[in-house]
Length: 117
Image (cartoon, rainbow, N blue to C red; front, side, top):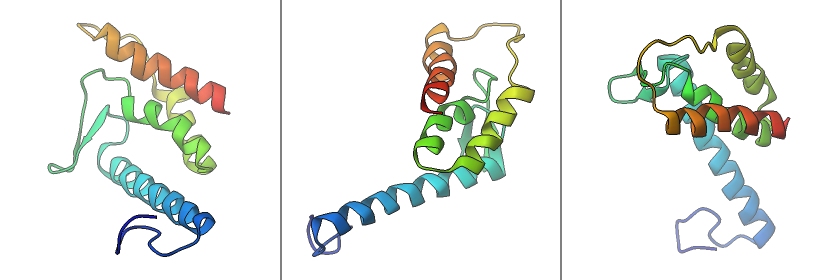
């Protein structure tokens, strides 16, 4: 269960698992709130600048996070992300895009969100 001061120190196994699970979910939601507040609709949050950055222009973080939000039971947040995909995700971008990144982040994220819901 880890050393002194670690998550779950001194707790029975089931309680350790719950405490760890809660810590992971809290970390996800903390970062998700930062993304929503400062970078919603962009590919990624630039945390020090507190702004969003695009390199695909396809809301990569929203799409990446959808299956995780669903698995963690954050259905309201999942629905917000799904609404963004429905109304804002477009593929008319002109210019260079990374085929690899688009495949793993956008196509993979959309397939994962579909499969987990």
